[in-house]
Length: 532
Image 1 (spheres, rainbow, N blue to C red):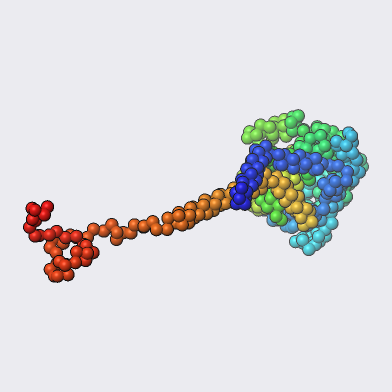
Image 2: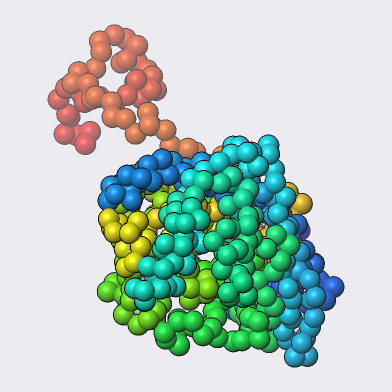
């Protein structure tokens, strides 16, 4: 066997093996299965793992921005007119949220923790000074007291006179810092001797700086990777007791900080929001990229805050049953000590037009007011998140309070928050490295098939060159074996016209050989029969 034949034979064997093995691995999905099983085992809340350390003390900075609505015509509104509000802010705070009292329970399948949040003001990222900026907004303590006594006309009348005597009105003007972090309210201070459980200080974020929302118990993902980060119990309860249906009282999903790996576009992700007193779900919206990391954007669909007419499952959030609001708003008085608090998306984004039209200054838009999560589907890591929620107060006529007699039922905006986080550069580099490894390992079968295809191309080239060489050798051998073999040219097959008469001259008559050289001719002399 020649060297060339050996090369062709060896290339053919390698090509066949690569193609067979590669195609078999592609069909069997061996390497993707291996790497995905590895991810399921590695991405768990287990002591000593990087994933657990990042979960316990998240490295990306979280920013909380507060926007307020300043009312410019409260008197006009109290007389039945349309309120005019102006958005002010943001007032930006850096949010620190390390988990504390982390303890493994149930043989390591669950982990309990507190999640206190601390806020530090960032003047360079703010539009003003909360210590000096003043705004006019709804007097929430006064409205809450009115809502409590509204069932009794006599009691309402007495409280109304009392409020008027101490100068308490429907609207108040305070600094941003007071409204946000608390001030001593004159009405609540006078109520405290009669009702000791009443807190005399009021603020939208009062006592929330450095405090937690309670104890959470999370699934570690050891038993089922799809349970990674899901909440098992909150404050010792596996369900809530506020709403009017079992489905509405369910605690579903994670706290928004972690999700299971290998996320599909077709699944809904559930998040339990303690400040909303309920679980919500987000659905796939579009593909995005954050710092070189591919991600799926998930956002709440319209059905999350749809009215029971549009989404019957939301009827359980009507308390008492049947007392429902429209699309885009949710009354959460049941978990706010009875205060008529209503939550929505900022500027009533995705809400009924009637709520938007009732307030002059509402300009909802998707870019500024949508809540979304950008999640890498392979690892389940959130690479960017934006949580936006608005706090409103339900204002209506209350019997016994003359200042409300001209009011139309209005969901009045007070403020909204924009809580954002983007993965830091160091964590992004780790995720990109992990995704590169996953991509390379998962595509090993395709790499093998590609090498087999290259070897097949080389094999074809070798075979073609071998045939070409063989043909050249045959032509050389043939000419050497028959060196005198005549070749037929075009002029050899051409016909010469026969002359009708030989040329005259002694040269033609006397030299027959020359006549033959000059070509055949027909003699015109008579034939002698004796010479035939």
